[in-house]
Image (cartoon, rainbow, N blue to C red; front, side, top):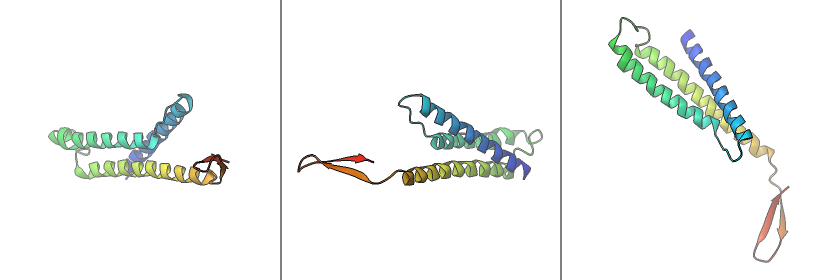
Amino acid sequence: MTNFLFDLISNLVLLAIVLSACHLCNRFVPGAALNGAHIFVAMISAALLLDAALTFLVFADAQSRYGKFSTPAAFFERASAYVLAAIAALASRYVARRARATKTNNNTLVIRTSPYSESQLPM
């Protein structure tokens, strides 16, 4: 259980670092549109694949040396920490988008310019 909590906390710290780095990059680089949650999910997916390869290919050959890391139970414990961190990343993205959508005002000013077109300006 302590390994699961350590894995989960380390993944959430990595999530905070990736989100902060993407936010700073979006803020200071003109034209950048990095999505930190999607980048984090891609990183977690790659880490999960590499962890599976290490667990079932590398560590499985050296049971005496890496016994507690090569068990399927240890892998599924780490994999569940990866999945929970990815769900947290996507949930935070969803909540942020919903908060931003409710913060913007849906009232628009319609300017009649001609009978065929209407210009709409946000208020």
